[in-house]
Length: 592
Image (cartoon, rainbow, N blue to C red; front, side, top):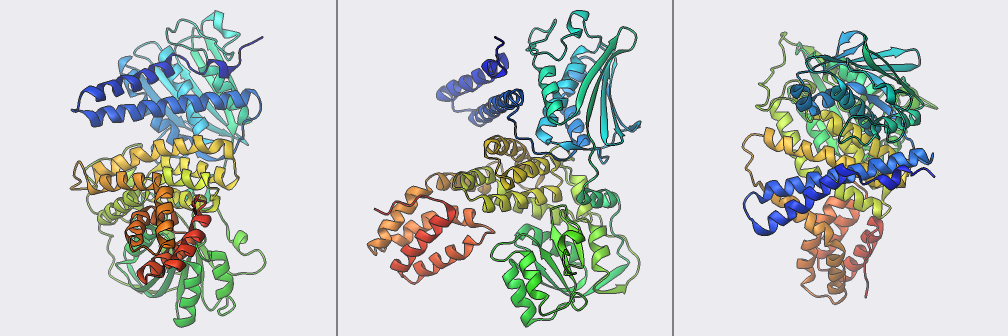
């Protein structure tokens, strides 16, 4: 009986990573110096083990035809650009030249090649194939990657000058098929075959002594998402300031960082801007003030954009008051105007300046001014990388370095601990709140040029939306592994960042408060029942974690009520509000 893939999950690579964890723990027990570096090595090794195990489980599910496949548009350029950096050491060791092409043109970082699939799986697929090609290639030779679209399928070819041994050719994609590699498991090409099959694609190879070896992978074609079309249009063209906008605009946007972005893009214009954080307040604002234009986020707490727009349309017609939808989803006007025209246009997140101003100029007064180019500030000291594309982020913010720095600082403060918060929400079945949080991060990742984070957030959002419970732990782990380098890069990029910043202390403090929250809530509840004045101090211990969990959700209102009751020493009312809040958050409150 053949051995299943799962029974051989723990190979020598996983054993080596586990040994690294144990070794570094033993060092920390005896030494104090360099503890921070050892802890980072432990985290990296632990993440590596977790990723290996999860990948092994994925392959096992694919073998059993139980894998839950959830495709979305994926840009292979992002994958291959990152892999070229990750494999830089073996490339240099063999003095190999890696060349990559899209439709026979050299691949550049701003190019795109879209396929339908799961980003994480495709990353694993091509990591295996490209690494194998580099290892098989003779020294001082070329390894080439060609990406071409063919009707409804996409063809990816990976070529090297090495040849597949004859003994291996008939079983190249079989489990445990390996030859001449000391550390080879024979699972790389086998997993590649399963991943390709899961994507409804195909994989094959050709090899001979004259031309070497070429791997052919076909994957389903995917058209470029509308959001990314706007990005590519704007990428190298900053808005020329030959005009000034005048008028009064209402912006309904619950996320403070997105408010920052909009305010920063419009700060040089003669505009009056009113910001509100939910649809209910947007409706109230239109009842008390007159506006030339409304920018309406479609996903907000208390009342979402769709509800707010329909209520506003009872007072103002489509022609009287234009409303522009703000969304990180791939929506069209026909999606929003199914029965009648209610939305005048769409601005996709992350916001692209040229498209943004093109829409705004249709609905507010445009005053001609002397032609000038928007001031482009010097780029940050740390250059762009596969983690943060700062060049792209600056262009999206019209070269405003101060705005980018403020946004990155806010992103770091608000989202450093988001994997733990999202995991807690999912454990408590608060799926809608978790989805809203990851949706926000996805949009912001695009704004700051964190492409890989944008992709992993997209996959996690889709899985939460579709309640794909078995995949969530794995996707949260992938999300964490792409978020952490972004936070680290932001810390290195921002000017004047101390080695042990207040934010790091805040991170540790909040993490501790989240882990102790239920115990602290129990203590607070008992003190409230006894009308003990110490309840105020106990409530202060709970506020940071509760504020983080309720951020940008309807539950913020309940937390505000709790704070008000505590301020007025209404302990009985506070106890009832606390019970309501914990139920909404899915937290367990011991009431005795």
